Length: 252
Image (cartoon, rainbow, N blue to C red):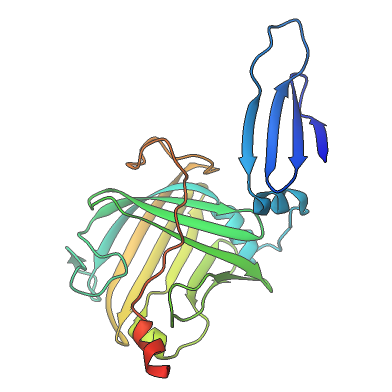
């Protein structure tokens, strides 16, 4: 089955439905020479988002705040001891992504009202590393995919307009192993602050503060400053950690 939609005076969008979904943009017949059609392929999940009505969210809700954060961000990040003195590295503190400080990240935040994908890429101050996380909206909360066997359930909660917290839904043995609540505050148009506290073995060991500026309202392609290069997908495989595996082994 195909559906043709007039995009503007120059193009027609043709959506072909099958096992795959193809969007073909063809130039309308004009006196200008014919050009080769541009073809874009999407998986069925993308079609699902296209066909669903775009949700609206109450001001200050989780979904509302995620909409405020969509796009590409440049974060400058610094580590601190608990007393506020600068920390040069957290490599020996059991951080999720350890390394020297300060450093800079690109953060790609994709949110279609139903699903979130978030990818962080080191661009300065640390070796190139990228990590992708994903979640879905459930009952007004963002529920992240499991971070690894035995991991706690990580959720996104709201603290009011422009304020989000990513943290465990409950404290248990897995949070005793590792926990790093992430507090995100939109401080102005295209500006945000992220602050985290790292807990290992039940004890707070360091803090992290990221000051971010939005580079683009969308993240359909890699930013020119991305050290991975201009080609390839923005997001990678969903990150999974083995640090909770021993909890699973103990119960088996």
